[in-house]
Length: 135
Image 1: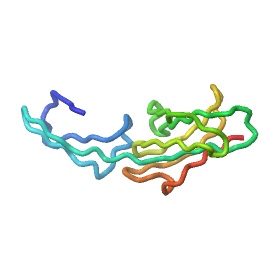
Image 2 (image 1 turned 90 degrees about the vertical axis):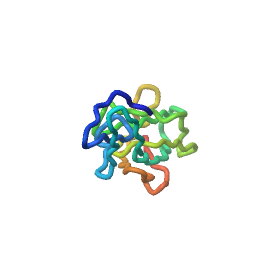
Image 3 (image 1 turned 180 degrees about the vertical axis):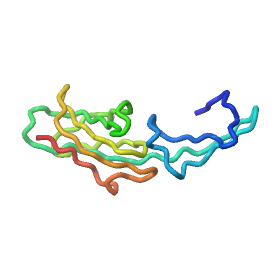
């Protein structure tokens, strides 16, 4: 991404993934630039999350899973695809650092949720699928 027409601050600028400042880490490097110059910088990497839905008594055949940032409710990411019961499918997503509530829905009804913490560049749950249990 290119950001233009910034004033060259002596402290520089910081960039991080996501829309919420809670994804900014203490190790986020400053990006320095001078008047009329361009600079490049690294954005801290996102953490991976794999999700399965588990349950056996819900009539719906599939679920939609949405990741919602606990500290920044406006930051919401739908996981692409749908899941069948008992983890027959696993959805994967890369999320910015933060606390995320993974919500499984059947139609417009929220049926189950699970909290997961993502740290910069780390795979949540040790790489194993996070199970969202539905009734």
